[in-house]
Image 1: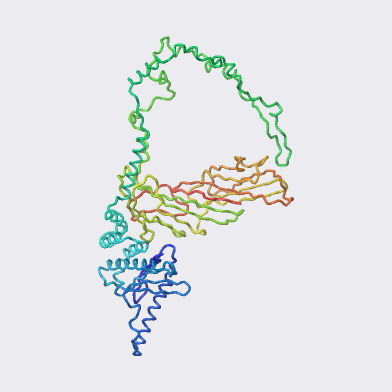
Image 2 (image 1 turned 180 degrees about the horizontal axis):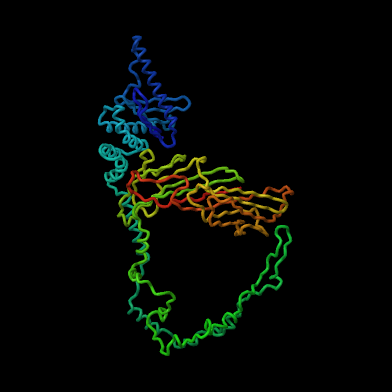
Length: 594
């Protein structure tokens, strides 16, 4: 690790700025900075005391030099590389490693030197003061964040050139194109376009087919006729070609089961009484003769075909052989000719045409219940950006700012730094090339104690004798923006049941040993509903066998105008529409109960 943190520390006063890497805790950086300050003040007070005693043989204050390094800490030791610019210390913090300490020192010195260039450019000279730094605090903060993660000299020069007069977003993002131009390379959007065109050309040539002209085909037919032998009628000597009995002799017909197999079996077990198995034929329908007996008569009598069909024969057209006359519906509407000749692709594009960039949130919630107790819960969310298609946008980059509200319960958030940057206070700026697929730009997770539960589930299992009874209770969260629909609850059974009694009706998958209920809608303020299943098992509870495990899973997927976590996407400024917020979606991850 070359550099873990960057800081600006005045000679007198509190620290001005601190930037750390994602994996380095800011608390440890503050400990290192405090130790550096205490060491610097101790050297300064000691030098002053020796000057009063008349002993100045020890020389100057070692930390008053223009640059240097210092190892601080007792248990956790860090190396602090510093440069003094006027009255401001530019500090870089790195580890004290024995193997690659030399590399760490030189890389950290290079990053500190780049940070010095940033603050000197921001203050328009070496007269660096806390007042001048506060005027360009936002630009310095963003520039040092990029410098800390590693930046080339070309990109650093482009950033420094655009620090005065341009926006922060342009300062951050314009360096990519500048570096490409200096190196003589194409931008990634151009390279991706060339690759797409090459793939389209390969597919077009691989699927191309060439047809022979009609004259060549006719000449080939004439030659083929001359090659056919005259005795063609005597060639086929296979008798099965004309005798159907010989062709059907090798077919095997499965025999029908005996009549006893169609009868049902009576079961007298308590709770499962009834007739099981067998085949029952219904006598409610009519016979074939009854179904077709009245087809030559009218519905009510008196219908004569001569009243509708004349004596003249209808001339056959040359279209579809008469099929064009079969019109079962009413006449087409008068507005239909307006759409005649319009391709189907154009109609679909007109219906789903995008007005601009679209953003939506996709959240996945996972929870585990132990009977009625919530054992653990977690929610992962992703913010997606759908740009205008490359064909319609002409490879023009999508660039705008937006803000996120309702982030009080967020535990951790990461962003795709190559496409989006943080401006602070929940503000973000995005710049990316157009894409056909939605682009994930932000990911976050919620604190477990602040994660909303869309559905509470309780599983109860009773093993009495050789009977296993299972009940699942579920109730919806009344604070949901919309009721849960198309919910599936699955029970993983310990055995493949020979007999099964369920309420309400369910689907049994014997190969997977699963029992599945499909629920159309769960009302928000309804009473808890119940799903029950009962089956005989081989082992008894009194035999001392291992406890049978029954696990339930819940699956759902909902779309709506609000996210489950309450996080919302808003434009950076009111009254400005840089993007369109479409329907959010949330679904179940591992949502189980046992």
